[in-house]
Image (tube, rainbow over all chains, first blue to last red; front, side, top):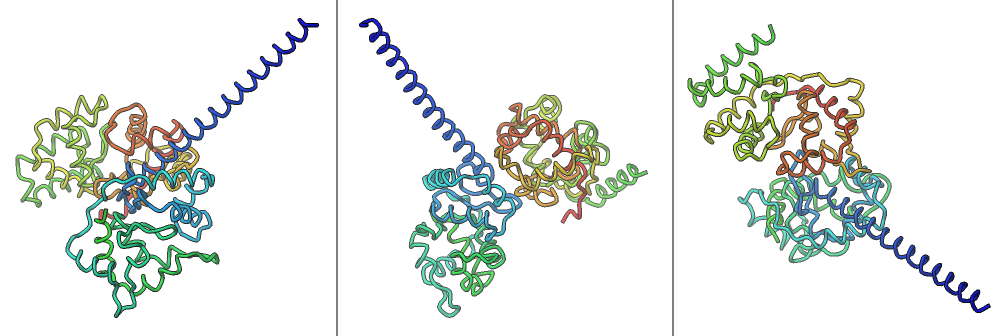
Length: 215
Length: 203
């Protein structure tokens, strides 16, 4: 009787230990796997967007992701998937990302702080600064700083512009209505449409150059 | 016939160029074409130089002389070839070869070309392989320091892609990271596709 109950107690204890152990092992495996997956995807982002997320000028300009607002990044990845933002390559990339992966990537990228990529022309930085800080009232262009912040770091769904690749900002502002807000789905990109139409190419270049050097 | 025409063209260009390519530099050109083909279209393991990006050729000559490009053939041939190359000579050679019109090698497996094109244009999201098109351009034409891949020979492309996975030329980020994720079949497909791409213009 005593022996039996002891044996039973022992068996139960053994089972409990085994259970607990497998539970822990599973949890450890999962988080390690998730961690490896996250690191793999981060590397994937950085192969195009710069090894520190500073952006890269390939055949096409690839934007800086470092220090970007997580909400903006998540919105853009969604826009690529829904094709309200035209970009076949990014649409393909975004399709494979789970929501938790997107959140983890965005949080990681927000914390990167490399120096700007540089390379923008420096001949009209003063004009760029004026447009950024004061806008162009005569052309109905509001001051960028009003929404993107005096330090150009953005907030929530409004993107950071500081240190953004010059060629990327030029391309974005030039092609805004052709690349953003496509299809029937409404998104916040519509707010930029009048401004992008009211800027001349020279003003776009000046502005893009100015923000590209902001840290 | 074709080869002779090209040779003539090179002679004429070298002659007309006058300024930067004088008599002693044409010896430097012959030192290159000995392996890279008399019309610089590539020969065996030596890649085509004709139509390659000026800035890319200059950068590579520098990486050979600094021993950053380090596969066995580079060590054997290109390290000595660049050991005493002056910056001016590198500049002139790059300008010369980049201005020659390239001819596609067309030597890959045509049946793999479609699979290669899909990888080139779309990447492989599942295995974190970036789309080649974003840096190398829609016609694999390259730009600035980013090489033209279109029409390079299948064996050369295949070996370059394999060698990144083997640890050679590790300084050429992000290519080691990207190429290292490609399977042998995917490398075959990419190299095949690229070998068939012609060129529109040297713009």
